[in-house]
Image (cartoon, rainbow, N blue to C red; front, side):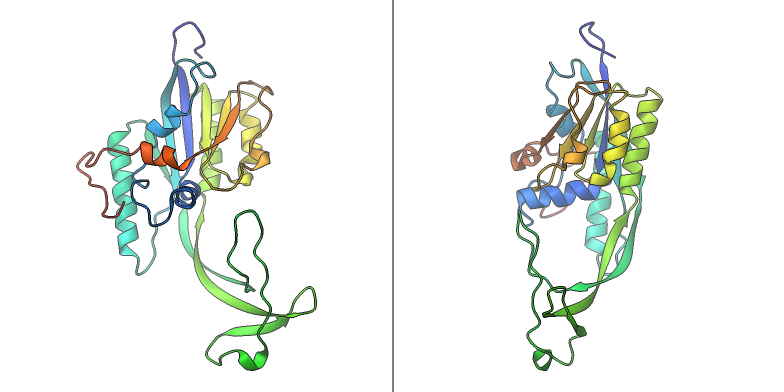
Amino acid sequence: MSDSAGESMRIGVYVDAFNVYYGARSRCGRGAVGWRWLDLAAMPMSLIKPHAWPGACLERLVYCTALRDREGDSTSQADQQAYIAALAGHTPQLEVLYGKYAPRTKTGVVTERPSRGRPPRRLPSPGADRIPEWLPVEQVAGPQGGDELLVTVSTFEEKGSDVNVASALLVDVLTARVDAAMVISNDSDLHYPLQLARQHVPVATVNSSANPTVRDLMGEPDIGAGRHWWRRLRAEEFFAHQLPDPVAGVSKPVGW
């Protein structure tokens, strides 16, 4: 590992892609242009303070995602694959690890839209006689005794990225492939692997979302190997670090 001897400090960056995408969308605005073509090599390295991690150089960029294999959504699939191809062409240190993108059905009560800083409120039923016959909902008693509406919805879930982030992080740390690690996610499930990694190397946790950084991901700056840090990204940092267009023969999708 480098310190003041002029040697490089090898940095591994581990990205939970969907966590970053939805976090960036909440920070920058869903309809905004200019943040999706993100340079995931330049942006993380720009966050490192030289006095904290001197001689830092990118050794590994592990991008954990799942292909949006979703019927009727061919544009999103093509855009995602174009981005991954551009990222690979621009960043030789890149390794892409794939999870699964699978359909799911979920059942729950109707709530209002979530508001930042407070959980969504459960909405009362308007009354059984006011529920349209075509609407497949069930009126049920809520925990406070009032009537609520139970619905079943079809959705998609990404599975495996958190496991892939944790696995790649620990393999690289325990085989001494990297001298420090940066995890870009705000997923509390990563608490334990981050805790283990901090015993061996300095670790940074970068939160891309609009929500506060999960306390379980912070740790203490001086435990284990020490020199740990964390921070939350600002919207301008996404806009400021974009890939060239085109790059490696791949053009940025329209609207990006």
